[in-house]
Amino acid sequence: MLDPQELREKFPYTRPSVLTKGPIFGLGYRSPWISGNIIQAKISKKYNLNVMLAQQSAREIERTNRSFKEVVDSATISAYEANLNIPWGADGDHLKTEQELKDAVSAGFTHFTYDVTLELKKGYKETLDKITEMWKTTKQLKENNEFTTEISLDETEKILKIEDIVFLLEELKKRNIKIDEIALRFPGYFEKAIDYYLKIEKGRKIRDTREFELYLKEISKLSKKYYFRVSIHSGSDKFSIYPILAKILKDNFHLKTAGTFYLEELKIVAKHNPDLFKEIFEFSLKQFQKDRATYELSTNIDNIPNIVELNSEELVSAMQSGSGNDDLRQVLHVTYGSVLTAKDIDGKYLFRDRIYHTLINNETEYYSEFEKHLRRHIKYFINLH
Image 1 (cartoon, one colour):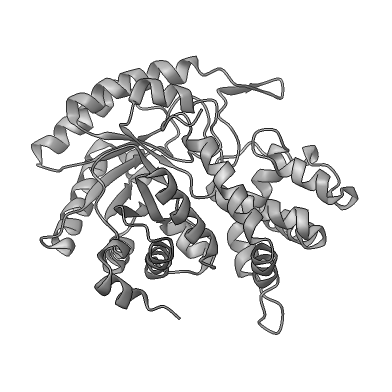
Image 2 (cartoon, rainbow, N blue to C red):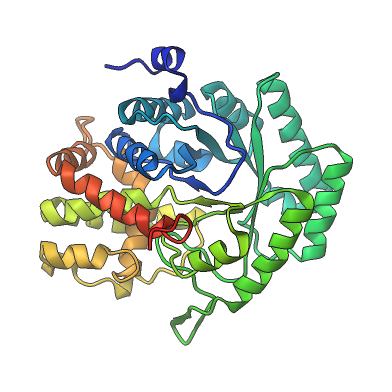
């Protein structure tokens, strides 16, 4: 078994780096096995991508019963196995407490995303004080080591006015707080596992991107004036807005896509072990109402076909990103933690090991599907047409 600490000491390219130039692709990896992370590293090398090979939020850490250290160790081993000799970063995402921040710093993360959703509800003073506190703590903990920071403003109820964002940036400037990236609540909806939409009218999603584009243009102007990168959270599977990001932001963005890879793994399970897939779905459906609590979703489970009656080909079709069943994908997406940690009365994992064995038994397809899926996310940014 490879020792991640020994690898980091012997091979510098297996250590997380500070990424200062975009575009940055936040890949991350939620499953407990390392194989998918290795595939991500191999694909990143093939296309010479700036990646956050380790990206995990405090919420995801809790749901998967992992630690920030395990996430970085997985990425280190992946970088070694792939010989990923280009810099890659580690993003401690949606950090809300000092302890979460300390854990991420201790694990070797290089990028820190401060989630100030709760403070924004109280007011701008509380928001500024929280950002200041988190930034100063990060600087103290990192000592003389470089790092980058991000403010997460994307999970707010309202879209921030441009003048309010300017106010926050000016106040942070007065406090000598350097913020490298900002994630904003854009017009429309960035729900998990599905494409962007503006609103719902008469039960139908309206996929109009004009408001998003206008707001993004204003944010792009601010980013140039205040020298920050635009971070897009829940950025996976948002195929309709990628051309807009490329046109307006050029390379000044950080696109976070971590959650989508778990669904790609389940798609392989659906094809090669449909009975296991159906078990996972039934379990996920029971967990869904509890697990959806921290997500903004429009899921209607009545729109999901009778999974029991579908064959493997039909299951794979329903799991396709963009053309499949959005409601099915969302149910499976937000219950990842419950599925990956579920155990029987004897303490054995219900699904985890069987998912892993299915993937490894179809390793060539596993790599191919990951690459195909990732190409759909990056093609507008690195000339893959």
